[in-house]
Length: 204
Image 1 (spheres, rainbow, N blue to C red):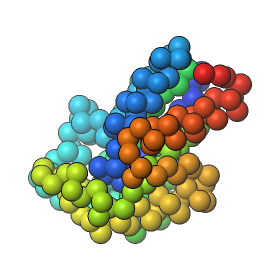
Image 2: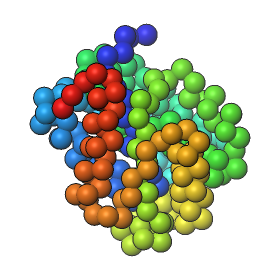
Image 3: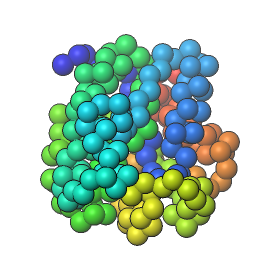
Image 4: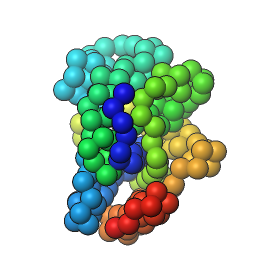
């Protein structure tokens, strides 16, 4: 295993809550302060397993929940070496959706937490999990068209939100109100990351 230098921050939350936007804002903020920063996003649809994930999300494949979540985890395993490489060379790596997504959506789909966690065991662990939170009813308008199977399932989104909030309480994840606008949300995210950096003896 490549020695870990950098800190891993997972940006989480239900679909259309602003993960990609806030990940990009955080990446730019860290780089502007001189920190070597890497970024990844999951699912990675460019891999063989990622392409299979896209097919079932678009309704071209039908899999039971267990297979879906195995594929999501396997997609991260495909990128393990690349992620470890970033962690060895960067001060911080931001991941838009990581293992925590499988826990939230998997439990929302009725799968056991221990089983889901086992799928991810051995992957680099997050040093900070930021959960962007907003009610699904407020987010459905953001993606009126071209929703995939998960995005269009409002019941799943509501269940995943509940799971994220419970997991955050149980596991110490940072919950950020994503309904307050892009800029204040970004400030809250950067504040949480600043605290992580300070706790690890680094400053920005």
